Length: 192
Image (cartoon, rainbow, N blue to C red):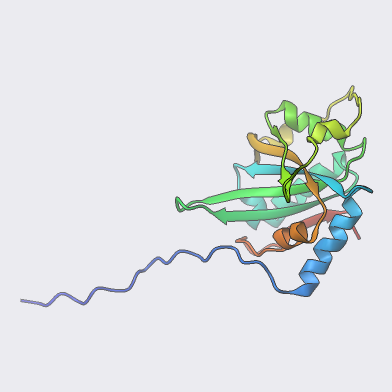
């Protein structure tokens, strides 16, 4: 009778959790981007877009199409792609879309909200940040952009819109390394 081979080590080993970078160049780039996007009070807006299609993570053509779509509606932005490993063992594919508080941004954010994104009021160091849409004092958008081209990529009902505070903590958070399909984790427009 043949002996059974000894048990093999695990064939699948989970990927490590995202790590905060110690590279000062990456942190400096995020500090510069955030300072360009923040207003005089240090506030900027974030739309966390939850992806249903992961093509922008590994396909340069899909990434370029997403950027071209956003450029049509947003004069300036930064997008940080992230794929966070969840405790249940699956990846949460999403992107942080960072934009300034300007009237040109308002119609886009309102269209995202109308498609189901939730408005969140966050806290930073114990202080509640303003609700995102209260920053646009009595703004009215007559013509909302048509975002149906994004619906094949983004689950708007699982997405959120929030106000952030420009800080070293935010730069450090956005500079963390996450899992991606070989493309740059950041898209920028007019932030040179």
